[in-house]
Structures are given as structure tokens and as C-alpha cells.
Image (tube, rainbow, N blue to C red; front, top):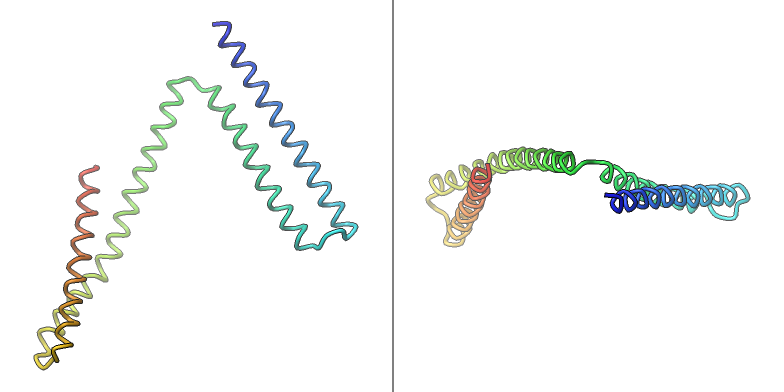
Length: 159
């Protein structure tokens, strides 16, 4: 409808104006920082930090405005495909990360378990305190193993 077209044109014009304003303000700040550095009005370290902060803020604002313009230009169908594509990539990354972490935890956990079992079986002369320590280690390894299995089970359920 005509109202939607006018509203869309207004949003695009407003975004373009904000983008232009942000660029002008940022460039003005960069010029000020450069002049201040040339005339030694501030230390080089302060100038460098201020320039980096200004640059980061500028890039954030420009990315925000450009992102909004891009989303406004997308149809509803292409926007949904875009979001679903990112969800799929994120989901795959999470699955890969969990597999990697579980593998990296499982190997040392199995080594601990074997070590604790070896201590229990090869040291019949352990003191009462030694038996308590080894028993606590066995409980901890068992608890960590159960937690790791739970994480893997949740991952399999999500798949």
C-alpha cells in the first residue's frame, strides 16, 4: 500500500541520514584527535586509545544502520531463510563443539579412572585416610563421567 511505501521510504531516508551523521561526527572526531596529537595536546597513548574507541563505536553504528537497511530491503521469505540458515550453522557449530569438548574431557577422565582403579588394586596397605582419598577420587570420576554422559545424551536427543 501507499502508506507502507511512504513509511518504508521514511525509514530508509532516516537510516541514510543517521549513517551520514555518524560518518561526519566520526570523521570530525578523528580530525580532532589527529590535530590534538600533532600539537601534543594529548599523549600518544591517549590518542591511540581514543582513536581505537572512536573507530569501534563508528563501525558498530555503521554496521547497525547498514544491517537495518539490509533487513528492510529483504522480503519476509528471504529474511526467514537468512535466520534459519544462521540457526543451522549455529546448531552445527554447537554440536561440533560439544563433540570436541566431550572427547577432550573423556580421555583424561578415563585415564583418571584407570589410575584410581590401579591404586586401589595394587596398594593393599593403604591407610584409612588413603582409602578415603581414593574412594573420593572414584566418586568424583564417576560423577564427572555421569555428567558427561548426560551432556552427550542431551546432544543426541536434540539431533
